Every structure is written in structure tokens, then in C-alpha cells.
Image 1 (tube, rainbow, N blue to C red):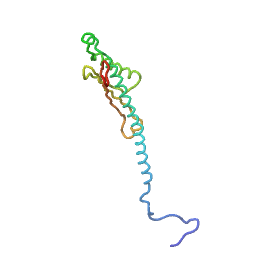
Image 2: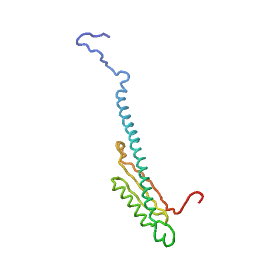
Image 3: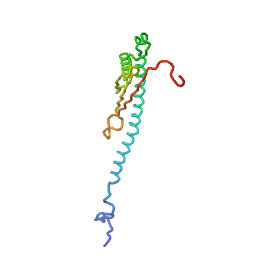
Image 4: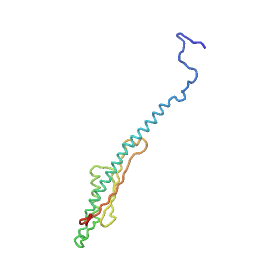
Length: 162
């Protein structure tokens, strides 16, 4: 094999495939896959944290609404018979008014339901739905959290030794 020198000589040109050419571009593919995986992981951290925050907010709103409703004592029954029970219609109205005030304060995505499972308690369930910030890149557009709180009307002194 002769070596060519001079202005027309081609240097560094190979005529056949070199070892390792079959992996050409694999770094680019790996980089794309890793970038998508890291974005998805960041989305889980950011939007997962938002879901935990939503759950705490839903719990707080449900507890406050239940407390607002449980304070509605049936005064007619209390004065006539001495029995303290929750006035179901007033309790539901008070809890729903509290839920409406939360939404009117500019908090969107809050929905709730109010029930009276027993004559002396009220139960409020609140669902918070918020759009995600990063997870839409993998098809998750929103996260929601549902919490339920029950408040019971207790009269007199209660606790150990009573």
C-alpha cells in the first residue's frame, strides 16, 4: 500500500466502517431519555408536593366547615327538653355557607358536600382539584385531594375522671 503526499492526497479518509460506528448517536438518544425522565421526576416532586399541600388545605377547610355546622344547636329542643342536638338544617346551611366563603375568597377548585350522620354530628367532605405545573408533559393535567371531617356536638364537661 502506497502513501500519497502532496496537494491532491486525501488523508484521514477511511474506506470501510470503523469499529464503534454502530453506536453512533447513542449518546443523543440517552440524553433525550434522561432529560424526559428528569423532567418527569421534577414534576413528581413539584406537583406531588402541591398535592400534599392540597390535601392539607382540604382537611383544614373540611374541619372548619364541620365546626361551623356543629355549633348550630337545636334551640327549641334544648330549651324544652334539655337535650342538645344539632339542628340539621341550620348545620348544613352553616357548613355550606363556610364552603361558599372559601370559594368566594378566590380559591378555585374546591367542592364539598355536607351530611348529618347522627343527630349530634355533622360530616363535611371537601375535594380540591388543581392543575399541575410540570406533569402535563407526561399527560397528567391535574391532581386532586379529598378529605373528610366530622364534628360532634359535646355538652358539659368531658374528659378523664368525669
